[in-house]
Image (cartoon, rainbow, N blue to C red; front, side, top):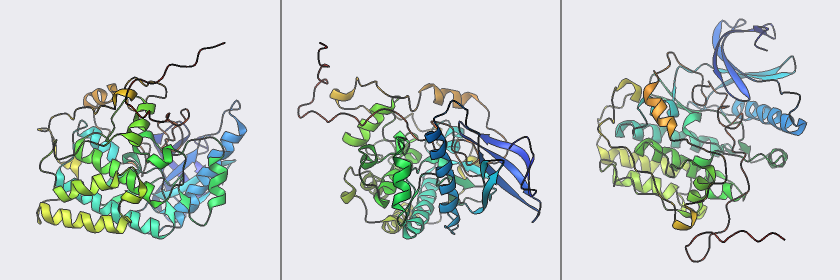
Length: 388
């Protein structure tokens, strides 16, 4: 597709603005309407790829177009068109000039964002989620890389590649039946990890993970191994935020901890309720505080100490099976490399919406089976059975 430079005689590709393992995004010109757009497309699958895997990705891509096009809200990326060119699916979206939240944290050397920005982003996210849930859509992969903050401070949710429409359960079953795990370890709810039923409350848990990371500079279970991260979500209580940042409003900390409840029944009822509680927290923190995009505040949060890494229960500390999810060296590299110029269309870690960086088109974790059941008495895991 990249070589043709013109798609369907209408969309002229101008500049590659993001690339991942499965997709790429181009800044383009819609020559029919004379407007700039972002064109997201799948890369052609290599011949050695499992055909069922390739088809699952194609269905997921089509699904993203279908789901995103059904949503019309200021907090959701607008989809203009969808089709195939030369057998390759493409998606035409509004071109967003800004930074995703993962990039903002990297720009800020993985330090927490200023409190007013966190509260502002949180409020906008809760309102956008309330809308999508009211439409029967569960995102299922909410993470900083899938959330854009534009230059004017507005926030948009992107990448509905593994979203579920409440009225389309059969389609979702066909996708999940391929053996591809849905979600990203640092932001997966316990019920996602267990392979159980997932509804809007799973998005609320992921929202809690995102807000925790914005507030603390790292997700609630910031461990190098995907398996250990998943065990943390399932069994470990996150550290309270105010012990690290006393300036965080207590009502806001309570919202985040409630969102991170292990049992979906213990989380807030819905995103509308979360939005109301965040609004009250903002009022508690103090009205009239400046709310500006964090990337305009050089050194913001620089006086805050690095967040200590959480520790899992003793019985789980030596678990090492799985794919590394967040190498420690990544933070060091972020402090050394320059901030990339220009903006991106909504997406993951500068991929302009492709969300194809870690583990596939939507950052899906493709590791092993669910973590083992927790023993009744803390201690090391039992030894493996002796071989005959």
